[in-house]
Structure formats: C-alpha cells, structure tokens
Image 1: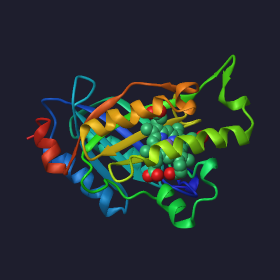
Image 2: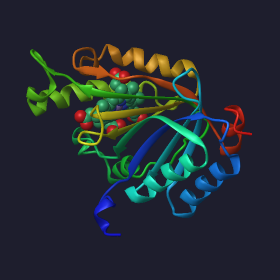
Image 3: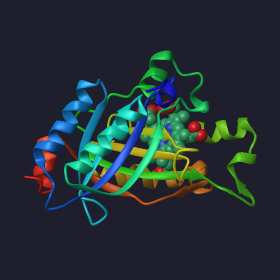
Image 4: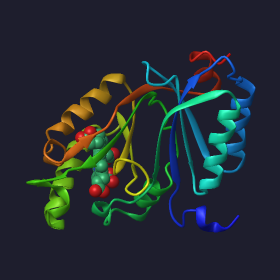
Length: 227
Ligand code: 76R
C-alpha cells in the first residue's frame, strides 16, 4: 500500500454506529478490537441509548486503511452499520498560540478519559447563509467569538472532555463534536450553555445527536446484547 491513506499529522477518527443482529459474534468483535490496539491505534465502545444505534465504536489512527479494515471486520462479525461519521484531529486555527503540549493533545488524544462515561456525539457546521455567514467574518472577529466560546467552555473544566474533530471535505458537516462527561446532565448543561455563545447562538448548525455510555469492550457488548 502507498502512504496516500496515511495522515501526515494527527489521526483519522471514525464514529461507527451499529445495530446488533442475530449473527453478531462477540469473539469476532473482541478480536477486531484487539487487532486495532495491536496496531497501535485506539478503539472504544459505547453502549447507546435509544433507537438510532445499539453500539457506537470510535476508532482513531493515522492510517485510513486500518480504520477501513476495522469497519470490515465488524461487518464480518455480524454487526450492521446504520450510521457513521468520518473526521480527523486538528489544532483549531484559533488555538494557534496554545503550548505545544496542548497541540499534541489535540492531535493525538488518548481516549477514553477516565471517569467520564457519559458520552454524546453530534456533527456541526458554521452557517453560510445571508447575514449569518461565519466564513465572511474577518479572522479577528471569529477569534473573539471563539475566545468567548472557550471561556464559557472552561467553566466545565474537570467535568467534561471535548473532542472536536474536523470533517470539512470528509463528511456532511464541518466538525464532529464528541463529549465525555462525568455525569449525564453535564452533557445537557454544556450544550445548553454554549447555545448562548454568539459562535453557537448565531452561527451553529447541528446534525443528529447520539447518546450513550462508554464501557470496556466486554461490558459494552453485554449491555447491547452481544453475549
Ligand atoms: O483548544 C482549546 O481548548 C482552546 C479553546 C477552544 C477552541 C479553539 C474550545 C474550548 N473549543 C474550541 C474550538 Mn469548543 N466546543 C464545541 C462544542 O454545542 C455547541 O454549541 C458547539 C459544540 C462544544 C460543546 C464545545 C465545548 N469548539 C471549537 C470548534 C472549532 C472551531 C474552529 O476551529 O473553527 C468547534 C466546532 C467547537 C465546538 N470548547 C472548549 C468546549 C469546551 C467545554 C471547551 C473548554 C475546553 C477546556 O478548556 O478544557
């Protein structure tokens, strides 16, 4: 294989949403996860609430072929893919002056964060319509608005980890938002609070929301009925 499916910086991130079927094979799923980790990539399982999916699998790694291979192995393990999101890690242009260590943590996150099992995912874009066009605002104004956003986000320090991954050119929205929280209500509180930041109140467009609970592989599979 050539290197053209390998990121030169950061990692690819797939959110794969699955339904359990009568053919779902626990050992095959566990073996697929084991292979991801043996390759030095990361994978985590989320037991989902509601009808949209039973299981979410998040995988992170620089080589898109390996991420593709995981998807194939899970399909062969009898899970049915019902939704997905494809993105990559990045350092936001508004975080250009954060210390190097913080940049590395954005590009190469270690997941899942400990003690933060309440999980949600949703995609979002910034508007490009009429008066509400984020992309026609001057950089300095966008930076101000993102500063306000960061300030309101930091009030959740310790209770919440945000992973913002970039998907312009990869998927239907511009970012994937993955939140890991100490308590389920932290998810609601942060999303609600940010609705009042101008960057979100005026400029954000959201896709579907997915909610679940992060668990170790065995517990997640048991919870969703892959026994
Ligand atoms: O990188 C940093 O931590 C610096 C500050 C920061 C940036 C640059 C930051 C902080 N965010 C940044 C970028 Mn965020 N964030 C969201 C959402 O639901 C909504 O209204 C929006 C979804 C949440 C909940 C959230 C939480 N953030 C971004 C970007 C990229 C913009 C770009 O590059 O153009 C998006 C799309 C986005 C969206 N943000 C924080 C949070 C929280 C909780 C923080 C504080 C994190 C901390 O300091 O630990």
